[in-house]
Amino acid sequence: MFFWRRLWSRYSQDMAIDLGTANTLIHVRGKGIVLREPSVVAMDRNSGHALAVGAEAKKMLGRTPPHIVAVRPLKDGVIADFDITEIMLRHFIQRVQRRRTLVHPAVAIGIPSGITEVERRAVRDAVLRVGAREVFLIEEPMAAAIGAGLPVWEPTGSMVVDIGGGTSEVAVIALNGVVAGRSTRVAGDEIDEAIIAYMHHEFNLAIGPATAEKIKFEIGSAYPVDGDELVTIGRGRDELSGLPKEAEVTQPQIREAITDPVRHIADIIRDTLDETPPELAADIMNRGIFLTGGGALLRGIDRLLAEQTEMPVRLVEDPLTCVVLGASRALAEADRYGEAFARF
Image (cartoon, rainbow, N blue to C red; front, side, top):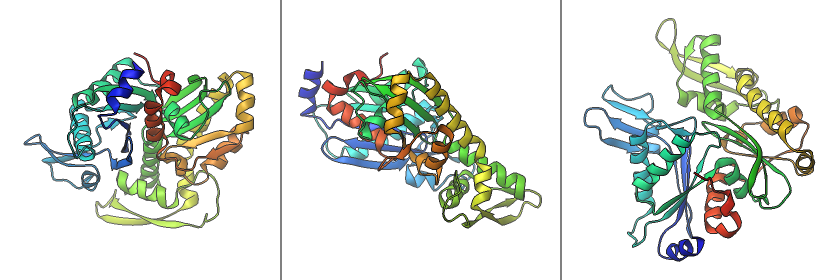
């Protein structure tokens, strides 16, 4: 099978897709990462047509008239709206395939490790319907480990924690398989929601997801770090008067706000370590836990997790691209990584 796929690949633009709750990345063989766009589609309710996809659609979140809705078709790392996901994928793939090819591409796509068989088939079918020749599914922590350059094919343990927008994935990997792992739908979105709830509770201020995300990027932290005096302004609507309002919020306040979701991520890491065979646990102690995904960029989260697990924790060089790079590498080097693809 892999011989024929390599033969077909000479005439097609094989690609890997990180279909994330927050962002979609596409890597094309021989070209690198050619697309990074928010996973958002703006739809006209009256006509049923897509008005914008990606960055242009994200600008419309929370700002549209009643007949236009800007939606994120993936929730918690899985497809929540099949039709809109297909529209989004078709748009993105057409953008990166500027010229027609005789052979449709093979596509490797990252999926959360905790999704159901039905959800796996929904992802596969969506990609097939937009023109893929064949679809290979790879669990996100495995793809992230490959993308981070970890020797997943060896009989030694590697531990990766991939904190995305909709899910956080923890896996101990050896011999191209997940030996122990956990998946939780507590990740970047939950952190944003915790900030929204805090601003409501402490300041009677209603803010949207975009404002919460902005606050998280500007001053969010999981552990006391240099710059703890950082302050930003949250702008929204006064819950009492209904008028526009702004409130000054500090880094320690936001750290308090996001304590619960961050603690939950630390808990599933400890649970996974408890299930890890002693020999592999010793490997992890020597090599450390590797952090990937957008959530890994939260200030101080590596230090907090190191304290909570009593293990070395390392932030990979480019945590945002590990999944798509790993999926692409697994597709290109199927002789080495073929066993890493999910089975139906």
